[in-house]
Length: 410
Image (cartoon, rainbow, N blue to C red; front, side, top):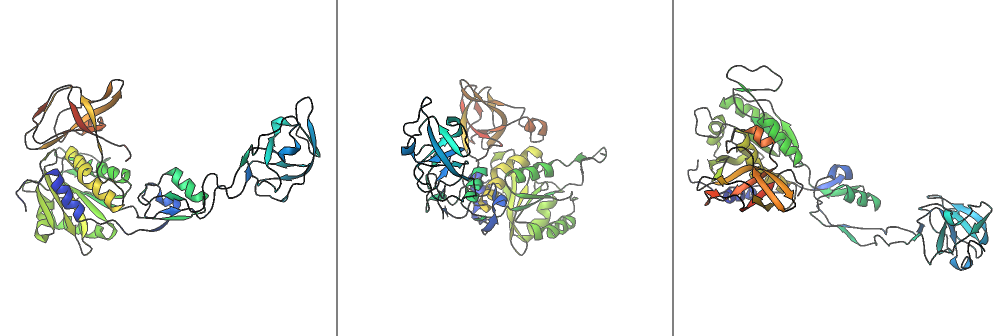
């Protein structure tokens, strides 16, 4: 147990110091979408790998058609046809032409392509009305990528364009770290699954859905476990059952100072999980440590939905990104002009829900709803968090403030 209040940075440092990136290994390309490359990728081939046509038309020697005009076209015999992937004609004799398709290799001796639009599209003989420029409509070998080029640096988060490039150079796999497996547990005897009936003293479990969706959006594999009642033995049984498939565990609820704070009661005797206050609102009660033989990291978040979500953003999200080898770990902040005044308790970093807008006069942010940590409806309508420093008790309208823009890729 810890009575001293930790700063947000101290708690995050505690977490990151205990977590190492997952081991990397070669993964099929499609499995790496959204993951970070764990290697530098150097091209082993050139792109294009051979000179090829950029147009459907006729491969020619430019000097054979220099005099072509619409009134005095040049006529050349067509000695063959070259399709993409069907290179039968390897060389072109002077004074001849070869029909060629887009992407097909240029025959030796040809140095330009006359597009169909400049010809009569002849089969045995072609009439050419305009001469091409030197090398016109020819894609030169290596003009895009040269053999030995560094294409992707280690740490690059792989998107569709990266995967297309890797496939284009013949890579079927790339080294990356796997998606972390995250087990989410909601505790509380009052909780019910959505779709079931509510009693007079029960509520629906929204936290596990909120946290599982947040983990999935962060790139993890999320396992949402059923509701755990307020019984230490039931909690430990559920936790033990799940550790086999967990790289990280997230719980919500049961970490405050009440008589039924089952998570703290169950885990405190292990002496491997820290519990204590963090100087933030919402989300003051926090817990973090390791459990099980493999020392699986566990985050014990508060039970109010806004507290749980903001705690995820501040602490779990950086941990997931560290596991995946993604940098930066924390969501970057930006600046915006506050549209309405706000107040904040001294000594705590306040995270207020807000609506961020890129207006003509510059970015603005408007407070959404009140500070209550149970106001999940207002959380859903926000797209940003307004950050009010610990030593600030109020900010006037028009003040420039720090903002965390939610749901943006980084």
